[in-house]
Length: 262
Image (cartoon, rainbow, N blue to C red; front, side, top):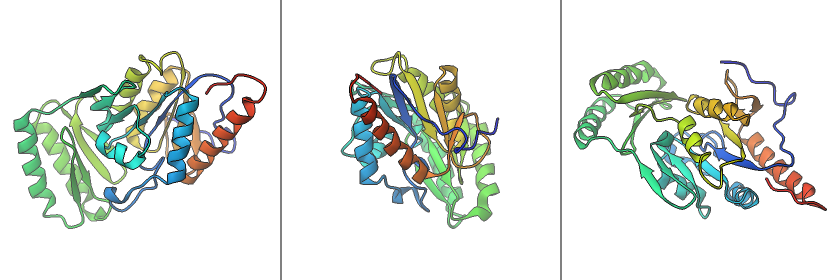
């Protein structure tokens, strides 16, 4: 991985053109909380997303490890294209939903195994997503190695599954599913097709999304510290909010006296 440029040196700005926007949620549009159910997107940010979606003729999607049902609740009243569980489920601009499911016997067996193991480590949390499982240890860092070992052993037992490490979490998901593939699928369909992709994310789970955007000469933006494939960097969630506000302001200025579409 390469180290992204300092945000002050290469601030991600957009000018006249047509863009497709993709946003991660946790750590990007919403500040990280101690428990995933405590996460929220500020109302003003949701309003900005609605405005940005309108300016881009609907070419805006949320791309997250969360299920789409949770994304809808977090972003309401905005409703639009979304990729949940890292792309294991995807809703297009027409509202059509595609979902990859685990075999029932695999899901039930793995759920029981993970629940039993995680129950013995106070402070850890198992999040069941249907076709994937998230093993959280943010409040029990002393069990990080235990959780990682459990996840690795589980994947070895069930072919077709893969690990996705993140910030104080490791996920077990269907192999071959990632945010890069989800963004690539969106980019082949209207209203995204033919536009320049912009993707903002903060975690290891977003790196393949950055690669997919870079391959299309798009704008890839890493939130926070750490090495990355992204070409630009924003310091934190507040900086993302500032970037959103500035992008919308510049679009209004560019609309004065000429046609300009994000």
